[in-house]
Length: 297
Ligand code: XIL
Image (cartoon, rainbow, N blue to C red; front, top):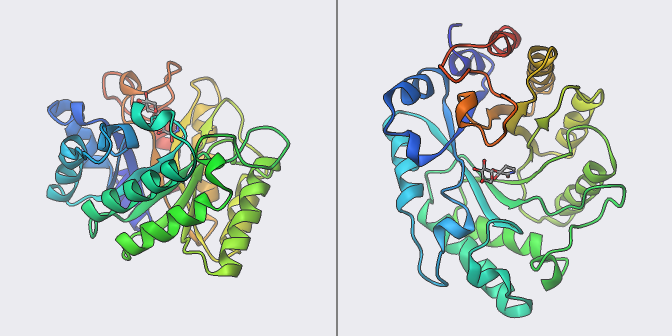
């Protein structure tokens, strides 16, 4: 196959990219985006600070620009993200307790309702687990509202958009480690108790090495009865970049419930990182990493 999206579709998967609204008016950029990708994530435009800048006053204008571009061009959409400790609007940052819990649930309900029927998968909760060896939750104002805040968010999202797959999404969870095991235990508990969760996202912001337990980690989550998705893939530029991209793609293809891969940007010059971690260089040329992914799909 000649494009990432078409190659992924051969095995029933998707291949996506994160997109900032500001690039949709650049034809050199949208030419690549439209040609290669069949799933779109708003890089920032559906986050809490963007969609509810003042409490109770929702602004979907930039998120809708991305959603409309995707739908007009026949692309699917991942929703990112309904509840997160970061990129909260100022009014929410110092909120605590039951007031914050209520505001968070209202946010989840309003945003998921606005996009109802348009979202393939929502990252309902993002980055709620701590780094390091504890395997526990990250401290945050949301966590301090009570340990059940995550399941409450998932229940609100399901009620608002029953058709979207609901994902938990995090980073440094790409191999089997204390953090991914903490999330694994939460997902197992959610499945056992009927909390609505359909998928787990592995951001996969990677350096120069490929975690050896990557595929086994995806598989153990899949074996719990959830889909898995690579949601924010980017890999440090260096001698090993193409190999790591190829290995991630092979791992996803080897896990039947790994339903798709999203890279966190299109061209290196548009990346949030400064180490040229994407599949296209700043001029829009395909890099060796691009061909490694295409060969593996
Ligand atoms: C990043 C965006 O790419 C940047 O433009 C923004 O300044 C900060 O957020 N994990 C996530 C993404 O879930 O939302 C983050 O995106 C990257 C890390």
